[in-house]
Image 1: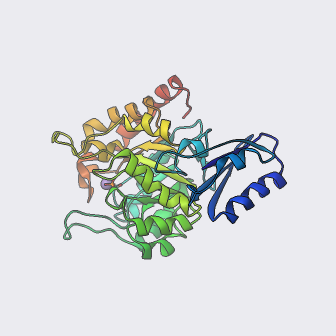
Image 2: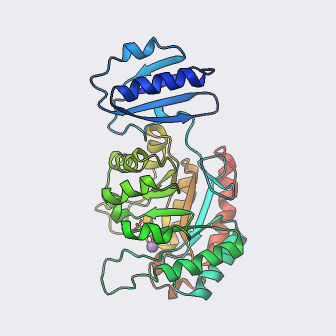
Image 3: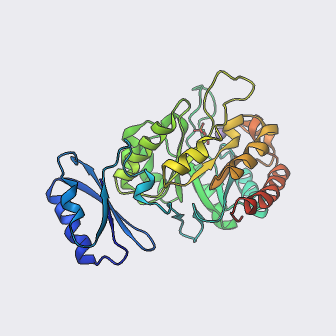
Length: 338
Ligand code: PEP
Ligand code: MN
């Protein structure tokens, strides 16, 4: 259930409503926007008589949430979620976020050079995997924590935020000192135990759409994180598997406006995994921003053909620089900045 408080509701009025919900055995999630507090009640709400709540002082309206996702739905935060990082960079606000870097962290020179190049072109996040989900157990599996140490240094040297994939619960704690944002990969979108643990963390999470997940399943997956009280979730469309084989995946651009309509969470586009082809990445990145994405995440490497993973979809630094310049033209056309 959603209880929306009036614009000038007092703390006493808000607390009174919260207490009544808690006494009824409901978990209450509170969000305060610029003018209004909204209380979302999850759990055993079917036995509740919502008419009683409508009469409480300070209450504007009360309704039941009909969608299966309760906290991810737009009603919880009608104005949209803006995730703010420690250096003031935001995802979900006016500015389109640019995340770029190699598929995998390979060595010190590679990650430092990539950081320098993508920062110079306008990226605010450095991406790079240290724990890699590879289809083959014989393929490079990532450098682990020593890789993250290198990436953290490279980020700090170039004023970038650090985003990297977490594959299992035991990696959360050791990763905490190094990353600004956890990435949950497509293969783990429905690793519900991992999602629950990330709900307890107070650090943003980028949740990628599963390889064969519906939009509703993506939103329900995000609900696991939100239900733990971690509201800093960013969604990512990274292509889904269809019968088309020309591209690695089918980049579902339509998921971007659908998510914007259904949810308050920011959503970014990953045209690298979405296409699997270097020559298609820029077009799908431009399309993502034009469709209303809050950012893009793209794979860039100083020497893409030598990249140890995802070489075919990795951009040359100058291709990335050109793409960012194109996005600087597109963003204002759709009411955003870059
Ligand atoms: C990645 O970002 O390198 C990655 C493995 O992505 P995904 O989980 O979308 O396949
Ligand atoms: Mn990759």
